[in-house]
Length: 184
Image (cartoon, rainbow, N blue to C red; front, top):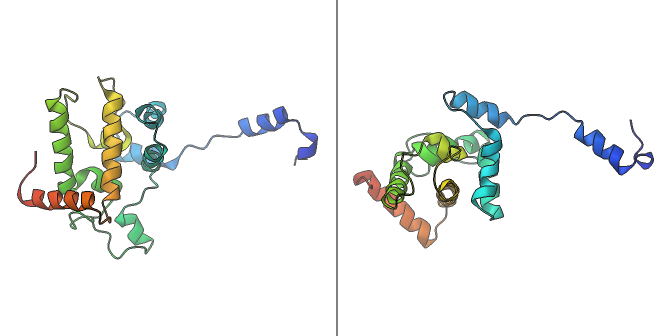
């Protein structure tokens, strides 16, 4: 045990810097769920800083990367909500993957965004589930812009899960309509 009074700042710094770095468990979870994807973690962790200066957006993406942004599936296990089902489609458990990509209603939302970006020749290929979750790492034109749009779209989806304001009411109305009419 060290007595801090006798240590200089440089010695304290060396004690902390020499500690073993523990990998986040979220890395392993992503790698297990997406074994075919090559993760460039340094690039993935830098995306929020390259895409936006807004700290709320950065914090939101950080929570997704570390899998500490909870959907109803996790909240149900913690006995914080009455149902594990998706708030939008009400048919499947609301995991991060389902909420931000797999939900039939949300997938229509992403298709609309993709089509708008294709019309403007900003996006040339389909967004993959893993790219929506962690961001785009491959070198493409407008990568930071697309990552920014992905982050704010995910934040809007998450924000609209329970909010009753006009924007969210309209979003939920559009999603409800998309059950009947496929939005592209």
